[in-house]
Image (cartoon, rainbow, N blue to C red; front, side, top):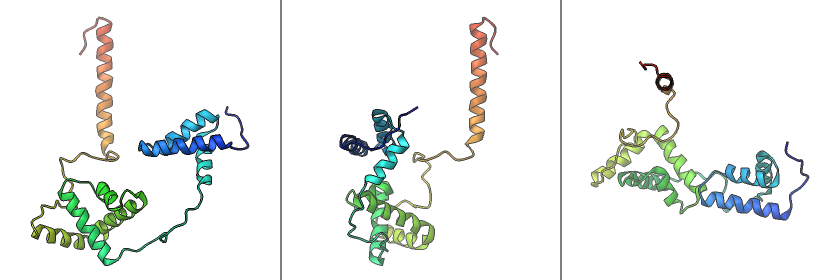
Length: 186
């Protein structure tokens, strides 16, 4: 059982912040930093996480929490993302580039683009058509490229595949057991 702690030392706080910075630079989840510091300080990872978030001081914002998109900004976003797709770049990479590396702005752009696909498909198609008319080879963002690697969770229909794999592995195991015991596998 982990010990109880009543406070954090300045050294522990600094180690936590450095570990978080290292995790971010290595593009690792913050959880890895929390786990590392938890092990070093004999605390629970959730306690480390909670302490980290309470230590973050509110940042003075230069822009409001919600900033609506102007028509011009929306047009620019659609044009840039669709052109990036035509060059083989991902939506995420394009929006991160548009945001000059600011992940908060990148998420704003990415979320807006995804929302436009769902709520204004005719607008997206119109911008795509205009780009095609200018000679760009823009893929259809509504059609998944069958040769593109799948990203994310497997579809829920993978249960059938899992059962087939499990059956195959069970049969392989039984055959290996039979072979090691000198019996005929079959």
